[in-house]
Image (cartoon, rainbow, N blue to C red; front, side, top):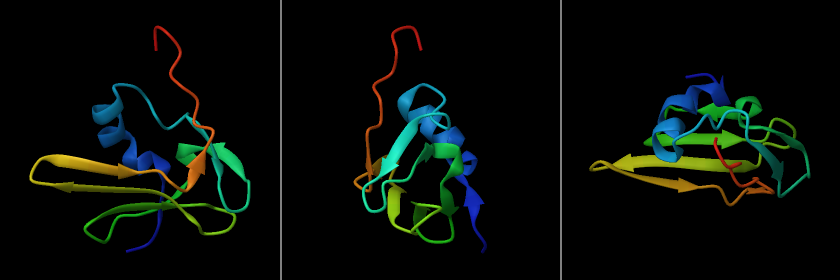
Length: 87
């Protein structure tokens, strides 16, 4: 399966965080590229989803689900801002 963009994760991320996460900003811990989640390169062919940096291919986010529980690892990102009040 080919790659998708970060919008492929929009539904599950909205379910988990209660808001549109595709417009959330991030900075790649490896190359320093900044962007929004919608710009990440997403692969969904494994047991979960992996989102990589469009610039250097570093893993930014991993999302898996097992027995109704989600696990989100965003250790490849920094500077994800806190939600604004009312969002």
